[in-house]
Length: 221
Image (cartoon, rainbow, N blue to C red):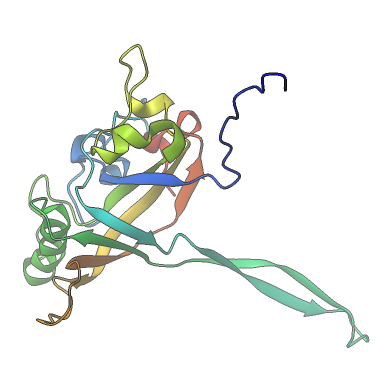
């Protein structure tokens, strides 16, 4: 038999890994307009700035859910004809986003929840700990960058460039704040489960696109 060319594995269903980060206050575009934090971000008159290199992701985030958008319909009926209706987009509803994190050294989500409670008690916001933050969710192709991601690293290309041009998708959640916090799951001495902390984020919408097409500094509503 003639020599057969080597077969190249082909994966019809691509799998992905992700990282979640919170924009630091100096680069947080919500800081210039939120009522629950100091004006630490750029104002509306500030020229758009490049997206920051998100290497400081929140450690141990296992699941993200709730990136859903629902648009209700405004219905009207044609006069004299009860069978003919017109439906037009009316109001958009953004579902709360849930983050589940394995109990880890990283206490970013716990400190964020504490900032919300502090505001409720005192009406004050600590410098550097705003109540409303912009959340970034970056997605990579596991087949291309699985090794780096399995080690907890953001992948870089051969030139040593940052991960900004390696991401497949970036989601930016706008003006989010912690509306529900679960410090620890139900404890069961007979179960062998991973303890997951979870937070639910209420927000003002999210944007999705290619990383190069999204600049968080101008993602305000």
